[in-house]
Image 1 (cartoon, rainbow, N blue to C red):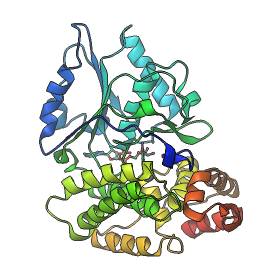
Image 2 (image 1 turned 45 degrees about the vertical axis):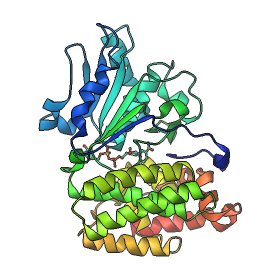
Image 3 (image 1 turned 180 degrees about the vertical axis):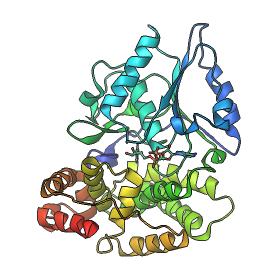
Length: 366
Ligand code: NAD
Ligand code: ZN
């Protein structure tokens, strides 16, 4: 689960990102920021960069020094524990010393890989054993997140969502939170429009779910309402500075769910992506499309945004879903107790028996 572990979150003392740089062109300041952390002559940085930038102008602008290690991160599949363990070994094989920092450049998947690497370098064993809440013992290596597409809130959250052999679950801990984020709206300008919409809708859905549930409080409400307003401006009005607004919406939406919770859409979408490997953004959209009975106003605005942005879902995602797969995705969804409790209340198990969850999935597959 990408967000909180339980309904005790009102009493939690949340850690936040300590340094936030925002503004057009601020990527140029990354060199200066990193140089403050390159504290000995043999220190090195690890750059974890989405491989979509392998042949891009951005590549030339990354302040890579001779000693640094660049890992090109592939996000065709969402990050797995195996992938994180492999990359951690690569860094360990590169040097006997810890890097001075791990810098992630990419979308939610790359940012999650970055967070996971920074944790796994200082915590022994496989990342599988840390999927859960507060299982990390040792502080992470200094880590920096630089988003190139906006919506997930991964830049601000205390989790890194990983697909493990048994479950899709985050490494949730204080140490997961980035030390520094660099929010440069120019970096998201070239994201493909369809993907920008799906990832942006992750933020919109975070807001709808955060604001419609039992764990809502003034703190999460304040951030959630502002993020929701920004999403509407971006996806309904298409305002000129919409990249700036989308970046801030993602950040505010991420803070909102940290202090509240996501809901029905995320629970179902987790099951969908675990079994069918459907990515988070599009998975959320496909599910949310059918959730008018839970979020009537949110879904109606969502349909408006789809029309306005000329979005059509790919048609071939759900061929031959077997009974066994349906059972598994239902198990995954129903395992996310806090999400259901937030959305439906303490008696959610009566409101949402298995058959109803299966029925909701079947609406998608028809
Ligand atoms: P992503 O990182 O999976 O990237 C989606 C696609 O966009 C990829 O093909 C990527 O290469 C491409 N892309 C990214 N930036 C680009 C750019 N500027 N130009 C061209 N192409 C670009 O997308 P996402 O939706 O940001 O992240 C989804 C992931 O985030 C999932 O793995 C999900 O589990 C995770 N997530 C994490 C949190 C959290 O709090 N940690 C919250 C929600 C989702
Ligand atoms: Zn999400």
